[in-house]
Length: 396
Image (cartoon, rainbow, N blue to C red):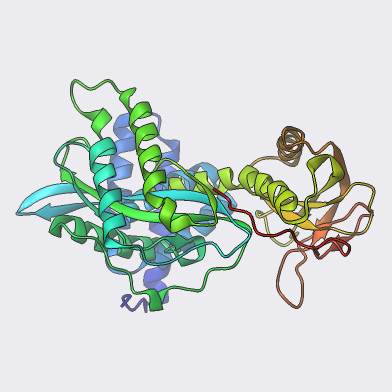
């Protein structure tokens, strides 16, 4: 059970003020010596607040800095994420370093994507691959026994800290982490989406976490190690991904892995949409057109996205399939260039690019995003009226 987060307004305000001040001083530092001093003070405070369940003050400080000081925001966010996903723990009376790793998958299917408990044999096999290809010699490893959707992962810094702590304990005890499926949300059904495995690595403090960090090992050994891990893990997961096309991404610390998966999912989702239209309705890419438009919420400073409506070339009204391409820090022009490059590679030559911006609109009935059509309206994606879906074909 999560800790009770009741805290006085005065204490909460004090946390926000102290964290913001320390982050500003760190962002102004001109030397590594001063950096280390401010980082040490921030890490001590962040670890204390996370351990006591008071991560609300951290979030409030980040909100304040996001509005007033972007450099200080970046510094505090980096340290807060690091404190949530890593720790110094004791094992047999000796200090150890522990890191929460995330293994992302990109997957698409005309059926429901899996998000469920995995067999002990599969989990043990993934742990063996982590130990054999990535982790330093003698590292303790644990893997959670669930393939998570993005909706089922911990969201707040405090939740990440709690899950990491449970995985660290499992690694020390030499077991996998069992997840109660009843505590997980029902994942949102999407054509293409991400899935995640969570793991932990624990090593004696100050020693390498990964194989390529060890003395005498070429640091570039990381490249071949990750390639081998991805290949082997793909084979291990294939029986659990029946009816899906999927790609395993290199594992990374929790927050970095989520950001990278979000970025990789954009192009993957567009590829999936074009492949699905061929598979389901026998619509070849040259027969299609893609309509691009920026959707934004003027009340929010972030969260703008390009939505891509895909329909038959020459049809100004209907959208058969749609893809959301979040900007994720890219500007609109760069995003549109990347989308058009991907569409050309996929064989879609007809592209309509609306100059007008649309409000963030969703279907009132089902909550699905609306997509632009060639006529300049935001509409619901619908199957083609005169086409029957083709018989199911294997995706492997």
